[in-house]
Length: 467
Image 1 (cartoon, rainbow, N blue to C red):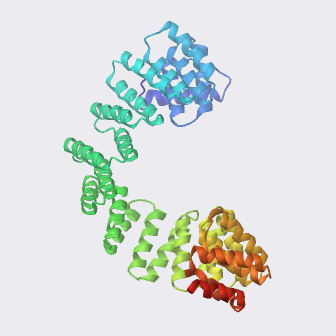
Image 2 (cartoon, rainbow, N blue to C red):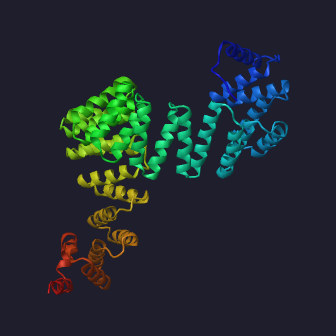
Image 3 (tube, rainbow, N blue to C red):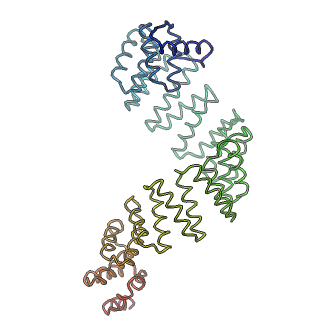
């Protein structure tokens, strides 16, 4: 079904239709008018109005194939696949060579995850099609079905056919590059894009994609050149400026990177990404007042962007302004209390401030949220030891040992804790384990449990290990 942009006649039809809906009068529209009205509502996502138009259309033109096809489209959107198939079978018996029937059948199959059958059905539609534009659309649909099947070589083949029909089909171009990326064929992608640019040398999209491929293979200078050509092709292409800025950052050309990021702020609404990158660049240049200014702008622009809160917290952390760092990480946690990085920073900052109960809470929350790094377990254990919560520390370390069995750092801590609680047999057991695993960590006993070091049996084990 082909539809153009709404012209004056279509606008008149729409106004007439919407006016009719406000009254009890039923006006007559020819089937083409209904098709354009329905298409318009589907395009802008007004499904309820599209359904009303389909119902009225079929009341006035019950034999219209195109209106019935619209009806199947609605049924597919509502996952009413059996009803869609019934209509399609009815139309097929009357018009067996109508390619649109096969396209809708394929749509039904695709929605039911029957992608192999969808491809087969679309290939039948392709055999029936005689319209170049329609063939291009079919190639794109087949390509998408192959993507669903993870058959990237086949998908590439059909998206390339789209470009053969329309060299400026950028959706197909993006999908081809996506296939190369997924297959890890970056060099092949570079070759393809260079050949494409020989035919379409002022395509900013292709230059941009080529630059990204060069970044992947660590050809930074070639990437820069590609992004510059993208900008020459379209000097308002924000994506090219952003990518160019990222490469300049990698090359430690921070002033030039800032310049490119700032261009994006002038071209469109400020993005939190650009603001954050500018902040990082100023940070690297040790222009701390400007850095923190842009970090502030980042969290103001997008309070949900965790990288912004993390950047501003780490900034104050590095400045040893722990109170301000704590203030900002608390604000971040108030916005998203399930972010594990926030809690990890919260714990570390509270530890530096010697707020031990809060630090322990932070490490526990970090673990509860699934961050099972060894250092997190150990840090929590050490805080609990300092707080005198020895049994809680043992329980924490036993849980840690499930993830990190035969770990000397855990064994020495368990040894010290058990000796402290006068569980001497357990203490000896864990101490010997620790010595067998890695004697270099025996300083843990001396640092965390100085009283344990005075025990003759412990000294004897240490002396025995030195012989």
